[in-house]
Image (tube, rainbow, N blue to C red; front, top):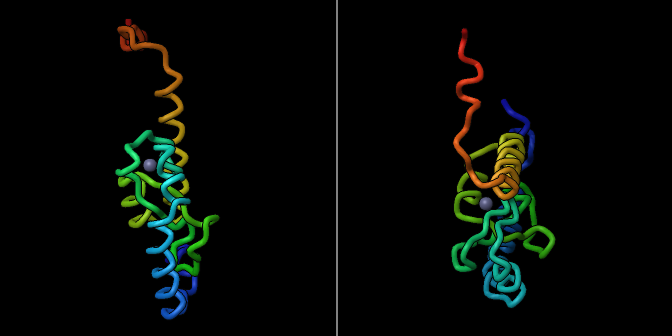
Amino acid sequence: MSIDDLFIAADPEVTQRERLKAKELKRSAWLKGQTGQGRCHYCGARCHPGALTMDHVVPLIRGGRTTRGNCVPACMECNQEKRHLSSLQWQSRMEEKRLKRAAEENAPPRTPSTEDQSDAQS
Ligand SMILES: [Zn+2]
C-alpha cells in the first residue's frame, strides 16, 4: 500500500466534465502560448512545440481540475512516466531529471576524464 492508495477517486461525472474542458483548453490560444515556449514544465527539456502535450499536474482521477493553474506543457517522456509512477516516485524522478538537465546545461565542454585512473590501486 502506498500513499497514493489513500487518495479518494474523483466523482466520474466531474472527471467526465473536466475531460471535456481539457479538450477545449487544448485548442485554446492559452495552451499554444504555453507550448510555444518549447519547454517541458517538469524536466525543462527543450521540445518542438508540437511534441509537447498538456498535462494535469493533479490528475483528474485524483480530483484535479482543468484550470490554467493545473495544466502544464509536458514532453512525451514526462507525460508517460508520470502516468505510471506514484506521486512520490514521480516527485523524486522529476528532481533527478532537473538536476541532470541543469548539470548538462552548465557542464563545460567534455574533455577526456582523468578521474577514471585516480582510484586505481597502487
Ligand atoms: Zn519532460
